Length: 464
Ligand SMILES: Cc1cc2nc3c(=O)[nH]c(=O)nc-3n(C[C@H](O)[C@H](O)[C@H](O)COP(=O)(O)OP(=O)(O)OC[C@H]3O[C@@H](n4cnc5c(N)ncnc54)[C@H](O)[C@@H]3O)c2cc1C
Image (cartoon, rainbow, N blue to C red):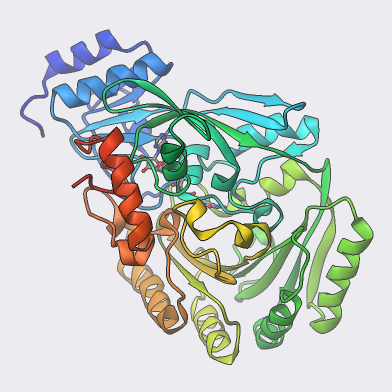
């Protein structure tokens, strides 16, 4: 524990903060420090639940004055555990969840601690949607600052692509605006460069007409049909309109899904267009090419669709994830996907193949730090389980799978799907994550806004 921390410091911190300060001896400490990933068990000196921007600035100043590590948390879903830190201060924005929709302008302003469900709940009554992720408890901040993929990615791009402005409290306590006209280099850096540049207290996003329902569904295939389904999917995804986003999952379903106990392939799709007849004809094309063993397809309310997978990934599971971009869905890749899918016979760990392209692929490579717009597909292997005794095996599975995909990887990694070794003060490997030129630009912005690397508990971009 830091030598500069005592009861006196805890009282001093409390006296400067309007929100709650939960220190190690306080009731509720364990709940306050808990992250989505139970494998990350850090013990901060105190968790500050900010009540407003002034608390943000006061917490940053306090951590700096005492030479303490500062972790910033929004939804606490970061798999690497960047929302907490041992022997430091956690600045938790989870009480700052306001969302304001401007239907005329087609924009949505979101406070720094909001989760995805806060955004969907506010936009749905206006038949608008912001492209965000697929599990409603995820924090908007971490999601956006890393990129943000979901059911509207092909229709409208990443969450970060739709970020038009942000307000940040920087390391010296100043509030700065990032937009096309004010600090445009900072706005650029926020679109994938993570929490390196300051604490974002508000995001403004572009929103799109959608709903109130979308055509969505799943085709389900048993293991003997996977090759056929993958081949059909490869062909289907060659010329799909942007409005169709597909995420294909291999998983051993939990009992609540009532789908048996064998690994299944689920081709999930969402059609983000009012042209329902076209959406149905596209779905029919896939149905004919690879008739599913079971299916569930129909109109579903957008908010419902956006939380349909929540129960599968509850807070408190143990988790380790990896991500690979690739371009081919040929026999060699399908061999790996089928073999690994059949090995994964425990409930929990699953993997998704996202079909990319569309609006996502049309964003110029240098328009954001986010890597590899040319990738046609993405694999996310998201290991999660409940028993600590399984940690080594489950982590080894995810790493082994990731190694098997290396021959097909086309470069660039999504920081939001990197596991625990990518946390804290470690430098990113720029060649792997962003590529050297983007990394150079990110370092420049970092030097300007956080020259002392106060914001280092993240996928860190050191200023030096
Ligand atoms: C169940 C689950 C489902 C997911 N689904 C998706 C998905 O569909 N699409 C997708 O793209 N990703 C998804 N992810 C990954 C997710 O985007 C990342 O885990 C992301 O980091 C979570 O953000 P958070 O705010 O919840 O995390 P936190 O742990 O709170 O923070 C994550 C990082 O962001 C920084 N940060 C947080 N708030 C701020 C702020 N206000 N200002 C500056 N920095 C800040 C933190 O310092 C930390 O480095 C999912 C993750 C989980 C666990």
